[in-house]
Length: 94
Image (tube, rainbow, N blue to C red; front, side):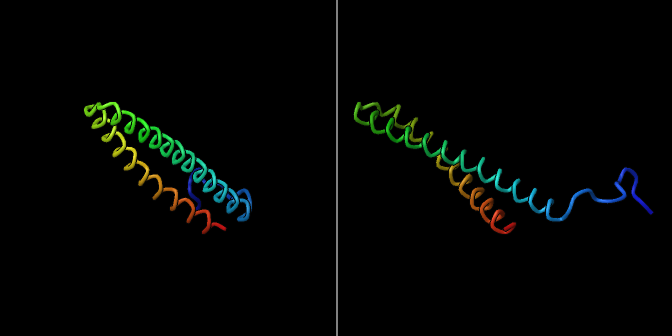
């Protein structure tokens, strides 16, 4: 008995499927690494702005920037977890 709309045979080899999964995992890792870089650069910029605002005595702006940095750090932690998961996946796929 066959399933409707299912192909009678699988097109491509297991090697091709494994290679495609690895390429997909590598692409995911590249995207995540790029996002981590963007967030790290933004955090550095915030740190400079915080320092400048403190030097200028702008306490209200410092508080706002600190809140932004907390948010960025939270996002960075999540992205680092995703990045490690993606690295593990790439390693698992060999």
